Amino acid sequence: MNRSFLKWQGGKGSIITEIKKYLPTGKRLIEPFVGAGNVFINTDYESYILNDINPDLINAYYFLKANPKAFMTLLAQFFIDGAEQHEYLNNRRIFNNSRRAGKNFTRSVLFVYLNRHCFNGVCRYNQSGLFNVPFGKLKSAYFPDLEMLNFAEKLAKASLHCTDFEKIIGMAGEGDVIYCDPPYIPTSKTANFTTYHTKAFINADHQRLNAALIAAAKRGAYIVLSNSNTPETREVYLDFTFYEVEARRSSAAKAGSRKAVKELIGIYPQKKKTSVSFCLLPHHPDYIPITFSIGDK
Image (cartoon, rainbow, N blue to C red; front, top):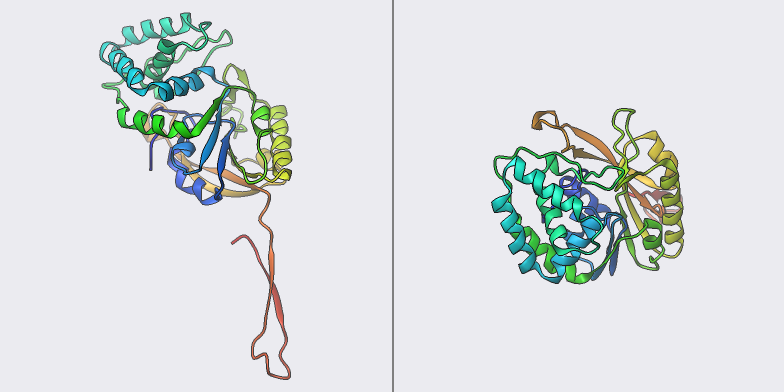
């Protein structure tokens, strides 16, 4: 398995093998919610459309793709000088002060630095757009040099976008494959992390996503969707066929409390059943043809 250079809450590294079972062959993979890019880096399509509403994430991909050597050189300097909490907080302040700078190379490098040094790789902003994740209290932060080189090389096949998911799904047509990993529908009232950059991803957004995906399927695209194993997920995405997979949660404070949970992988359109006829002893005068259906297994 190839690993992303980013740590990411809800990242698909732990279940990438399961996801790939449901991804068909095709020329182009479209990811409206690319996140850390674990599906992207572990598949082999001719081209990719990668999108995320978080401009810091997409800008980091943009600058890494444009000049990986310069990106990694500056990042290494931040790693060397920023291993302690007070240095982390200072770098976070610099990052937040530059939030109106647009495509800013140093800010993009700092985004990766913060990701590798903050608590569990959580990416969280307050309503003012300020990154507010505390220091991760790491003994040492792993510098993902090989992961960045692999990612940068693969980005040559990708176009990068930072816009609403509906616009990206609207690009899909005949033969495209869409993999969707939106914010999850909460499994309980206390497990309700549904933040979509600086705002909540609410039920109306899931309804809008479902409609966009079905419209894309009618244009000839094939859809694979990840989400929480809840009745609400099955209700919103009513026309999908769902399969349960076991995933390991990585956001708990203590490693011992990070339990495996069931998640859903949905596909659309549903696999069609095929009727097959056969008979035993076809030359016997009393033979009876038997017809049965083969489901998706």
